[in-house]
Each structure stands twice: as structure tokens, then as C-alpha cells.
Image 1 (cartoon, rainbow, N blue to C red):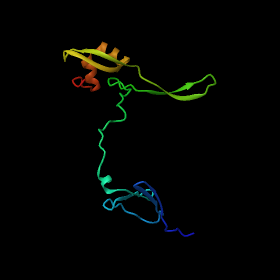
Image 2 (cartoon, rainbow, N blue to C red):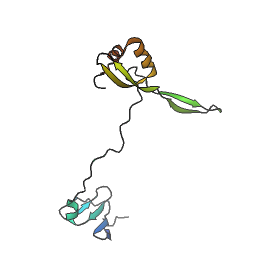
Image 3 (tube, helix red, strand yellow):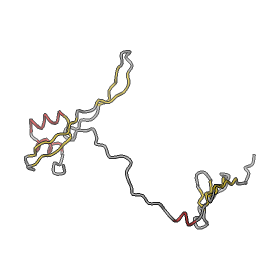
Image 4 (tube, helix red, strand yellow):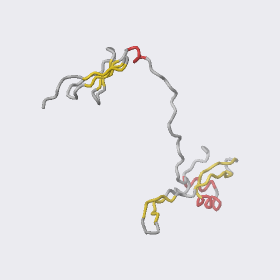
Length: 144
């Protein structure tokens, strides 16, 4: 059961692929006009002038950042709970915090501040004031 040292070559137009046995170690030679993959042992050869030209596209992130479902003033976050069916079958689910976007008047800054906070935090702000609650929670209102 000895491994054979023969190589299989397949060509497609200007590019040819050759499958080498995994026992042979290969290196990448870009100056000779071919690049070897270290993972699969496939040798890809093409014109060296094609390798020098690179396509440039502007970077665009795939996903936009998502706001976290946590209240910055109270620290409330989602609770893990069970959804219980009629047959008493339990499946995990999340109970999210009641977060609201609210525009509040900030007396010290003499302007409105748009915040995303829980309804519990809204009641606390109405009772104690925005400055006191923000100072206790460590929230900097100047950035908002």
C-alpha cells in the first residue's frame, strides 16, 4: 500500500490544476507563475502578469451594528425563561426589557437628549431627575 508519486493535471484555458499526493511538501513560487495551496495540495498555475493585478473594491461592512437590549441606567437586560405549552412542554425563550427611545430635557446641558431606556428608568428619572440618575449609573450625557 505505497503512495504513488504521480500527479494528475487538469487544464482549463490558461489555468491548469494539478493534484499532488499529500506526502509531498510544496512551496509557493509566485515568480515562476504558479501558486500552491498548502491545505489541499492543488497547484494553480497562470500567467504571472495576471497575479500582479489586483481588484480593489471599497470596504463595506456586511452587517450594521445593532443596539444592545440593555438599559444604560438600570442595567436591566433580557431574562431567560420557559415558554410552556398546553402539554407542559418547555422551550427556552427570552423576555426582553421594555426599552423605549425617549427625548428628555437635560437641564444642565440646556438641550434635549435622545436616550434608549427602560420604562423603569423613565419612572426613576421622573422621581429623582435626569442628572442624579445619570450620575449614579455613570452615564455621560454630553456624548449623546
